[in-house]
Image (cartoon, rainbow, N blue to C red; front, top):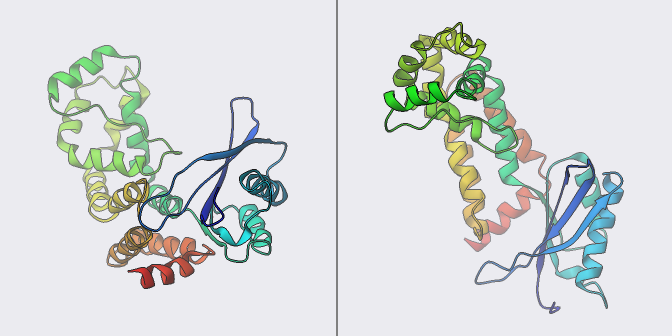
Length: 283
């Protein structure tokens, strides 16, 4: 790599099927266009802590610049917000003087969406059981398709996939009357999921779904924009600020908790305020 190239580094880790911790490192920065994204080391870690993450980072840089690490060319380090990542980044910043550490903004909004999720246990029961009704039941699937010719089956929220719970809540709000009509025709004695869902339909449920759709589903759209490959810094920061502005105008007890959570995750993001200043200059 040319010493003129500036880079960003992203480290994340996950567990593979054997329970081993796998760490990944990627990244380049260009002025006029998105830089290339590439994988450096793919390391198996015995344990995950600030020391092991720092070692993975250093190994990646030595692989990238085998003769001499260009420490001033590392400008951004992106990670999740775990305390050991923040501790590792603080130590690495002593070696990389121009490096800004920022925790993932899309993950921050995912945490905020989790606050909405946790505030509506009854909606959570609906989204969790709605999909179960059709598992291993081709007859119910057939009946649903006959009644809802242009509507897909209820989605199954996946906790590790950002925004899927909000997407499911939006689905039930949009198709509430139709879904209630179809589910009411199923025999509650056939499945505990059917009985549970039928008991959940109420005026309160419909109001809660409408409130969620009207006020919080914008988080899902923002996450989708932040996940776009090649998004410019100004666009990413503006997306977060727009979400922050929209949520600040929402009334209600849940909105107060959601706004507090958003402010908390942004304040704990070590490089966010710096990137906001950089974005203001560039824009």
